[in-house]
Image (cartoon, rainbow, N blue to C red):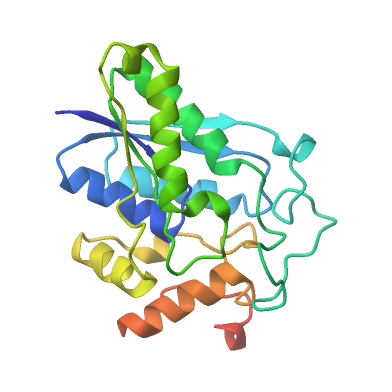
Amino acid sequence: MKKAVVLLSGGLDSATTLAIAKENGFACYALSVDYSQRHAAELTAAMRIGQSLQVHDHQFLKLDLTVLASSALTDPSVTVPIHGTSPGIPVTYVPARNTIMLSLALAWAEVLGSQDIFIGVTAVDYSGYPDCRLDYIDAFEKMANLATKAGRESNLLKVHAPLINLPKHDIIHRGIGLGIDYSMTVSCYQADESGWACGQCDACHIRRAGFAAANIPDPTHYQNKQAG
């Protein structure tokens, strides 16, 4: 089996991406990053998902981005905005997050002898982050093949973003078809320690709207039932 490194945050999209990689016949090596995010419950979710989908190995890396990255996800003094109140790129954007995580995945892939990395970014129903777009993924892949021993020796690396052009309801349908239990996942930007969602942030709004459009009951646990 070909090996693939799959970035697994613990959210809906990354869980679906892992299931797609497995469906495509890859031996999956999951990589989750603890960057001192305020929604650290997603890491517990990532562990559950990795176990459920029987990854070959699951690495959790500790990387404190609070020192470098000013974001509502890394700085508790910055309020996570309610959906629709933050025009443009929102304050939940973590500077260079996907570049950092893809670089870590790239390093592990080279050690494993893998030529495939999977990431669950989508450019349809998302918060507008610049590192979730196809031109960025293409550029990173090009850089990766210029910057690595493997790439220079023609063992070219492929960055797979299978959800990039899918709306959330299609992602959900795809995941349900692959047997994912989405109640295991955590998407909320300010989930509590148990993984219960706020129901107010961008991530909660996009997730809830996706289940509604898919005509599938939302399995998310909300802190305030009225929020869900």
